[in-house]
Each structure stands twice: as structure tokens, then as C-alpha cells.
Length: 197
Length: 197
Image (cartoon, rainbow over all chains, first blue to last red; front, side, top):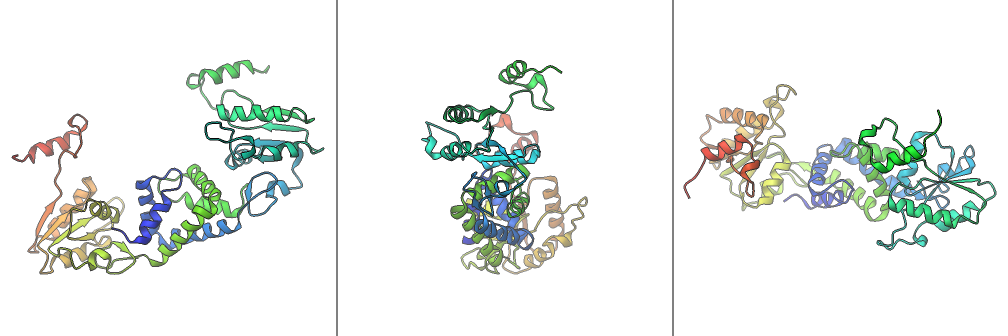
């Protein structure tokens, strides 16, 4: 029906997360309608990004330079190392503006089902970095899911012989959250970790 | 936080329908992760599409040629002209494979609120095409919404002096639909338009 160029565009758009065949068609038509104002700039941005972006060999972040901007920043605190699953988590923490240490991106979580072992993640690199004299604390900021917590547990064991403190993010009531809507696990954790005012 | 190239990519992705700021970030990370297998081909496909795709001056369809493949196809029935709101509707009808006539894409619907008048749609072009001797029937396939039906009504009036038959798509029970879940309007329409078996 549509030209081969359009079909191909729809096929590729449908591979983006969150877009199915129908929404990919809608997106393609939107792009076609805004050929000069959106499609051409987006194509240029993607070409530039595909060429320029690289993975930081130190921490696993994506950036246009290696080491990345976070690793290269001399203002950052070398004593704190925050371990996250994915680059998206690093971005989320950076958006808070409340962490000034360094990061280490694992690139996923351990998963026996999916055949993801320690050698598939950046765990050896983390252990090596943890041995650096400057590092004093490793914050495990993996997701509060089973896979994330399993991975955090494994990393804790691997770091046992390093002279660093290992900490995890606090569990508790989300800011702005209503108790009535919280699951039991979160409420129990918040109660256990209660703090004097 | 992320490099300027990534920020720019996210900004542009967020302009696609169905993608908000959060899903645009996810899409950007997915693209970055699959730089060579997805981002580069998608960028190339967009560049090609942005250069090659044009709007058919006859019917308003988008294609790499003008007149488009449908208008240029000598096998199609010149006596039938199907009027649709958008290119997406033309694609939907083409996917059925059950219409072999020509199309006319209005490019929207009349809307007093949004300031869309007849001169903003391809209505004059439609009236001109309707006057061609080959054309015998105009099928108004605008959406069954208030805006679509208003537009169909206006077009019917404009075509009054042409010697063509004007028809509309049938209303009724969708194939595979359950009566219990249908709205009253559709059921009433299906009942009124009942046919002898």
C-alpha cells in the first residue's frame, strides 16, 4: 500500500519500546506530515548520536567522550561509588542533583532464567574500582525488585574482602505517597526503618 | 546530565505521538544501546523518507511519486472516489484490499473551534474531481465522529449539483463485536439498517 520507504520506516519505528505496529504507523505519518520540521532534524540527531555516542569504559555510562563527563569531572567525590543497573537509573539519580560521587553501571541484573551471569555484567570492573584507595563507600542503588536485590546481594558478597563500606538505598514511604495505597512490604520496611524526629 | 546530543535526541523523540518525556528517554536509551542495528538504519530511513516522500497533488496521499501509486495505477476503477479524512484512513482501507477505486484525502475535518474551514481542506479539489466524466460515485468515508459527519454533510451539499451518486459507509455492528458491549447509537443504526438474509 504505502511506498517501500514508508513501510521500512514504520517497521523500524515499531522496534522502539512503547510503540506497536499501530502507533508506529501514527508516528510515521506524524513524521511525514512534519517532514522538514521534525523528521529531517530527528534523522540528523540520530545520525550524529549514532556516530558520537560511546560507552564509558570506566563506568558504563553513555556519552560522547570516554571517560564520560561524570568520570572526567574533577569536582566529583571519588570516595563515593553508586552502583546502578542501567544508564536510565544513572540519569534518574543525576536529575535529583543530590549525588556528587561517581557511578558504576552494571548493564542489567543477574538472571539465571535469562542466562545472565556475573561475567555478563560490569561486576569485575566494579570490584577492581572498589579496590582503589580513594573509594570509601559503595552505594548499591539497584532496583527494589527480586532481580535487583539478588544482584545487590551478590555484589555485597564479592566486595566482602574490599575495605569499603557497602550501603543500600533506604526503603520507605515515597515522598507524596499515601499509606493507604502502599503495599505491605513497603509499609513494613518504612516502619522498621523509622527514625526519631 | 546526559550529553547534549542525547538531550536533543530525547527532545525530538518526545514530539512523536504516543511518546512523552519518560518514554522518549526510554526510546533514546534503546536506540543508544542498539546504535548500529537500529539507530543508524532508522536515521537513514528517515533521511531517505524526508527527501523522497511528497504529497500527491491529485488525492493528497503521501508517496515517493506524484501522482501517487494509487492515482497512477491504470487498473483502478475511475468511477469510484472514496473520500477520507487522513492518509491513515486511506492506509486502513487499502489494508482491507476490498476497495479498488481512487481516493481523495481531505487532510482533516471542518472545525469551527479550531478555525478549520472548507478552504483549509482539499474540498475544492474534490468538487473539481467529482466533475470529471468518469466519476460515478463518491463514497464519504470520514470518521463516524461529529466532526467527520459534519464534514461529510457539508461535502454532500457541495456535491449536490454534480451528477454523481454520493454514499456513506454503513453503520452497524462491528464484525466480531458483541451486542452487549455496543453503544446505543450503533445498535439503533444496525437495527434500522437491517437487511433481509
